[in-house]
Length: 121
Image (cartoon, rainbow, N blue to C red; front, side, top):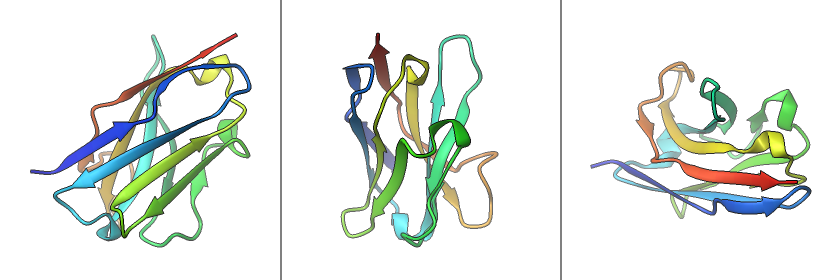
């Protein structure tokens, strides 16, 4: 019974901030790469960023670089997505995912339920 439970989504004004949390049970995130995806209305699901087993060298796509940061707390078995300077284009359902080391992000092993982030102008 692996569960990825997200929280922190909601409605925010342009320029505001949100921090998404992904609390994981049933697997140790220290053994997995953890990532975030999003899906905007009418668009394909998009990889946003990730962090490996180490806390070093998190990665984000260019469109959110400098605004979004992925982090992990292995002791809490929790992954975070800090989102600053939010723009309406960031509006999407955000998903947490776990991938086995070396498997890449084409097909994560586990997904969260998704949480809505809406950025209003």
